[in-house]
Image (tube, rainbow, N blue to C red; front, side, top):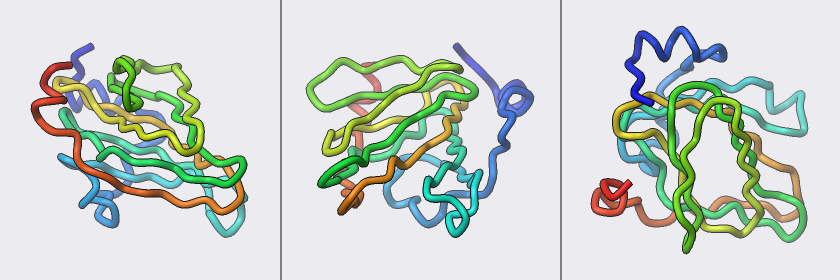
Length: 143
């Protein structure tokens, strides 16, 4: 579903937040981060992550000895999610994606739409994130 910035802003109820500068090296395109909880006050970190059209993060893995992983709650616009070796999944508002720990994956906006999801870091033991190679233009443009 094509969505321009003006339409997107009306539907993105959690707000765009600030440029995601701390993680910019792991994204192709611009992303924005709006934390929804204070990490000092909540055991679960949640943030609204917004991607401009065509923006996607690198392949990555949320490692955990037990528990862990990530959940994506799609809020506004249209995006993509893909696990290594599987077909990409079209993301639309209202969808929830549960990403098991130790699964290589990526997510981001479609070429013609802004996209926003709430990212929930699932608590676990010995958790860490491993950032890997970018999703190439060749891979992305096939979608």
